[in-house]
Amino acid sequence: MWNSGWDKIFKENEWGKYPDMSIVRFISKKFYNKKKRKKISILEVGCGTGANLSFFAKEGFNTYGVDGSKIAIKIATKKLKKDNLKADLIVSDIKKLPYRSGVFDCVVDCECLYSNSFSETILILKEINRVLKKKGFFLSKTFAQGTYGDGNGIKLSNEKNTYVSISKGAFRKGYGIIRISTLKDIKNLYRKSFTIENIEYVHRSIKDMKKEIKEWVISMKKKNNVA
Image (tube, rainbow, N blue to C red; front, side, top):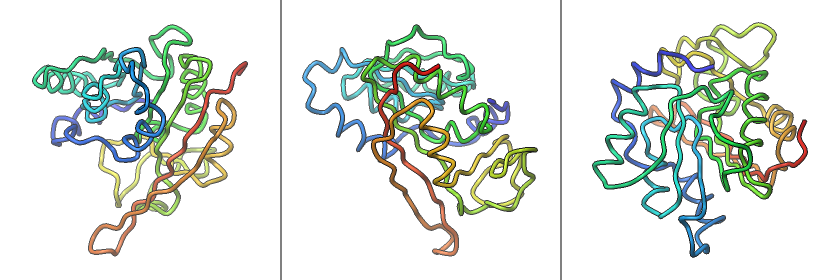
């Protein structure tokens, strides 16, 4: 569920300049040997202010982005225009993606799905599966158990690892829902709609090595005939 607090966050923070390295590595592995990149369509769900979109567009891919924040889309559009780059951007709830079925070669999620409950994420993953082509790829990066702030918030009813707010830690005020996943959670969630190719993790420290940010990076292929 998109939270309006993100509008304030996007207004107040200079985000959107540099792509996520996990995304760069994934796209490099899957598509850099492809000569006709303009025929490869890539969608980012929760695209924010466009850092990854700029990377896709500069590399010559057919680029799409969707986000619930009008502010984020406005900033992303302005930045892309300034750099003479093209992307198709839409403001929408990702629980019902505004695209036809089977149109994308790849979908990426860089810390977007975590801001949805477990039950909502199942619906979003079905939508991502729907818009992917038969042999399409999906990369998801999401917060892992043990990230600074885990255990310091108010939990969502009936969901063990989901918070409605976290009082301190790596998460900002206004984030709304925060779902922090165990490895078991990841497998239970993503295997319903996708064939998992690879699960890796990214750990980094902050506050002079006193705290950690932990993230899962899940590489997948579309599972066909998902109900």
